[in-house]
Length: 107
Image (tube, rainbow, N blue to C red):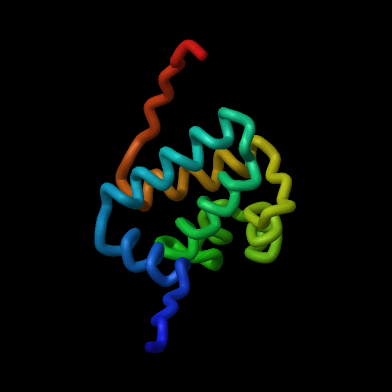
């Protein structure tokens, strides 16, 4: 019996495009990961969200940053400045029609 393999990125894209709650949860998770010291995973989640929503070309237009620079920023080794990260999050929030509500929880 042959196993069916499916690219996770395709699954994520379809879920983001058809389930706004899933898309909002991914954005929330990315923000939480950044704030909790896991920037590499956060950048990769943001990259998947950009690919599934606005795309890098539109993100480049809305942030006034080159598309290639945005690709590098949201790679596993990327290092976006806080200003660039804020701009990316702002575009995604606007596109998804959500806001972020940060809560502090005792460790």
